[in-house]
Image (tube, rainbow, N blue to C red; front, side, top):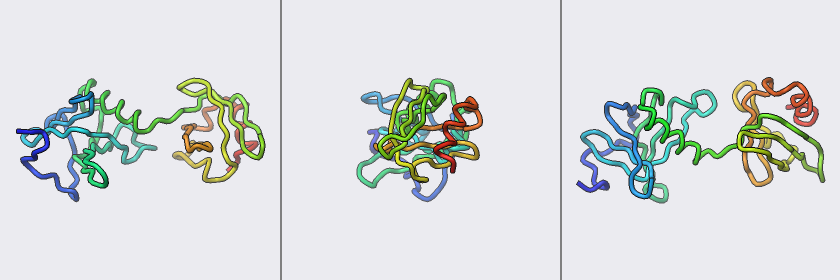
Length: 180
């Protein structure tokens, strides 16, 4: 049976939780993420998306097949990624990392005014960064109860998961300019 031919149609309105007993997550053609659902079919061209990214980064992850413009279908939701074998869970984590490319700030070297913008010089989990951002509330948005997401002039995102976890001097630099 070809991978494009469903034996059972996926309901666009019914929530289905995916488990390791009913599906296998693997790489298929061109190293694209595939999901094989037992007694149903192989879904190719799959991407993963967080349902609740702030509080549930390892839970409630949608697996969605891309079928072209405005025709994506949700295959199902992974309730808890830790239920899956490590290799399959890692494939989902890698897919999420590709979709949600974000720098996590671990140290703020400098935060200052520059030509009417806020200039940020920081260390992230991906290395050293320098960027400019507008001084607007929608450019430093809340992330959970203690974090912030900074959005630069090019709409790149920089996450500080917990402001109180920053070194005290970094927190003071931050709150001197971004106090909301």
